[in-house]
Image (spheres, rainbow, N blue to C red):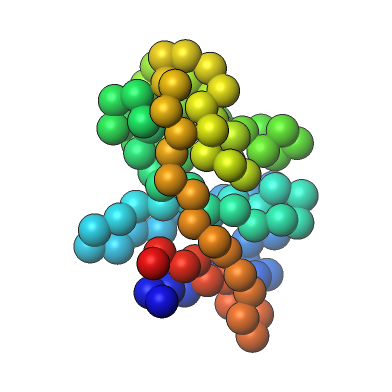
Length: 104
């Protein structure tokens, strides 16, 4: 299992998110009301950056800054056009106080 260490949990409190980049992958890690989620930073509509868009902590959604498609951060599902395909999601866990994402 390939994992990415994101940050100590106290650096990712509820209502915040962080962009994480590796050589092959960029993802957004979100704390929605105390629950942690990770999605690929790539809009399924046009492959543009997704996690730079506005996000709603209560609904746990993010809006693509390029064309306005909305995605559910918890599931990756596209909620509005022009996107209709989901984005990839990744399991997140906390191990010894460190937020980690399983990128497979």
